[in-house]
Image (cartoon, rainbow, N blue to C red; front, side):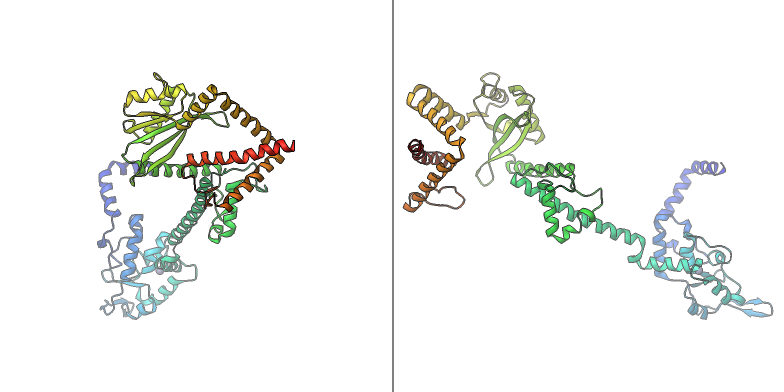
Length: 476
Ligand SMILES: [Zn+2]
């Protein structure tokens, strides 16, 4: 109880206390006093500066005033004084000129912090030794055995001087090693994530248990990487802490999200303050969720037209208002402004291009410069439908095409035959020089644009197709 009362009294004189504390917390070189008889006990310094004080004392070394005229004192019939020679014998020995007493340097710095000095040993840090008659005997007793207070203090002093072995240094070194291992592990996992994302591969497996033969792309790829890279192997699996394996689905998602954010930032930085166009289409995904894909089209700093897929947004329904709301949210999230929009392109659905309440109209209300352009592929489809409706031959042609594709697609044998005919024709074309082969371009480079390519390829396929039809009829 008394203890608490004392504390409350102390707290009442808060101001004084804080002053005192402030004085103690900041290291002041004046606190380091050479004369051991005038020193403040090391424990009275604030713990935060105690090591600093010790370091300062260690730099200065023990107070050994060689050559001082030590006063002589009477012991019985003899007069005795402190001897310089003792400094040579006991390197830790200190002499206080003011008190004419001997002290222990090691015990002053370290003994109190652990077990504390008791009895005779206490004199070496407090009052000092003044009995010169039995000085050597007292000094030897003070040094004592291996586990004496003095030897303990000496060991601590040596450890303190050798910072590489000190606990704090070991902890720091360990901390650095852990950090390096963590970085290696993170980089490896991130590399795997980036690879899977780039190739558009799924991460998870059906069975990710330890004994599974196929744990899914992510875990298998990490395993593969670990087996081939020693540095990574040293930081993965059993060499990593149990709670820091970096392989959990949550981590996978976080890394994926981080990659997505980075990619989005690159796109947004590329757009900068430029104007851009917006392309949107909505579709139902395999889990029957209505999704809206958003693509931005802009001219980059090099003057090239760039189309970048920005996001897939889940929408509750495909009404123009909810689509507009989703776009507004997306724009706000990425700090894009509708005022910089100069074009919008959608399919012909009424919710998109409706004259009054379609998405197009809603955006035009806010920004009249956002010109609407009907999607070219959808336009082409509309043209084909219109032509097929008004022309019997064209209509029949598309009907037959559908029927024959169905017949050919249903049988592997027929499909193989079709492929063979196509292959032969391709070979013939190459030999004759009608088709020029090119690297990375499926069947030649005569069709420069994507659209041209598909149209040309379709026509070319049509020739193969005719032969195939002949084959079907002759073999039937
Ligand atoms: Zn000592």
